[in-house]
Amino acid sequence: MFRYSTIKDYHNALQNGQTTCVEAVLFFIDAIRKHERLNAFLEVYETEALDRAAALDKERASGKPMGKLHGVVTGLKDVLSHKDHKLSASSRILDGFTAIYNATAVERLLQEEAIVIGRQNCDEFAMGSSNENSAFGPVKNALDETRVPGGSSGGSAVSIQAGLCMISLGSDTGGSVRQPADFCGVLGLKPSYGRVSRYGLIAYASSFDQVGIFGRSVDDLALVLEVIAGADEFDSTVSQQPVPKYSQQLSDDQKTYRIAYFSEALENPGLDPQIKAQTEAFIKRLTALGYTVEAVDFQLLDYIIPTYYILTTAEASSNLSRFDGVKFGFRAAEKNADLTELYKATRSQGFGKEVQRRILLGTFVLSAGYFDAYFTKAQQVRRLLMDKANELFGKYDFIISPTVPATAFSLGEKTNDPVEMFLADIYTVFANLVGIPGISLPIFRHPNGLPFGLQVMSSQYNELSLLRLSKKFMLIAN
Ligand code: GLN
Image (cartoon, rainbow, N blue to C red):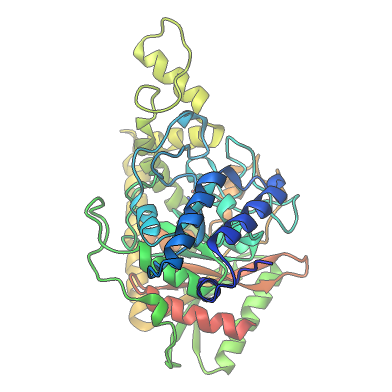
């Protein structure tokens, strides 16, 4: 019987002839079928995945060396272009649209011989924290189907949680990889802004968006990051910095790491007391193990959610203007409509409620009379946050915090209160505002039975240290 633990073990099993890529794909297709109720996948590429698996098995048998991700069964959030496959951002507005090229991250996975098993459900245009904003229905948390998986990359997180694929790629603009990873008890990594190309990633807020990775182990995340990261002639925002071989450098003997945590984050009245207590207990354990862990002030905590939602909605209102019924996908069936009427009808029918709310909000904060009061102010706060991050990383190597202030909430619980929903992002948006990497590590369990994570952040492009420390933390926690 096929069992999956890590890519490394899987590759060993392939080489020893204990399993095949076809067997792996069949195993996951069966698991996806059994978990259809979770609504994690919008589409499963059964035949294509099996054909590719068979071809890989044949190549391996003929002695061809394996690619780094040989036969790795991968899910893609429905915001990443995968040539000749449907792409919808879980929105009706992209009805019938087929990707005409591969996103760079996807291209690199395929070059290293990954197998894409399917397209994963998410919040429409990656806007949301519960996966309830999908035009194709919510995704359900596999541990408790009355609860949300988190969002926006809910389908990608649940796919790892329920064992429906080996790794998933998602996107993280304000927490969309780390927050669902927290709710589902899996690992979720958001690399630095500029570490992974966004070419072929449907844009939500371009100065925040980053491709992220879900998996079951630090080793898997490290290997996938190593494959997808690095300079790309199709995305000028990607750093030219060389990409370390993360997967081969995960152990180090450094014990002197200095770690900070924000006192305001742990004193936040919205923080679940159990999450607070277990996070504090973990900090005590780290101190006992010889780590320096210190509380630092972060008076801007209350400003980060408003800042994030002003800037991201502003950018979204611009990015989403291209979906007008003329260029892509869906067009409203308005008879005799002039162009403006066609735009209006298409956008009103094609976009869901939350996306419309954000386009309106973004248009408002950019409008002449309010630009300085909102957009400019938010940019100024972003600068203060950057200064704060630079100051902190002068003194510390890492910042830790809970990933989310509460465990997975019930479906429908927050759908009528967008501000409540926004508050689920309070600890994750900082990393996106300042461009640093962050990871959610599934090391805690709440007395209510649900998992929750510890978030670790490092300075920009310091993923190697982040992954190394994560590996240690996973060992300490187990
Ligand atoms: N929940 C946040 C939002 O709705 C984060 C989304 C994301 O990271 N894509 O904007």
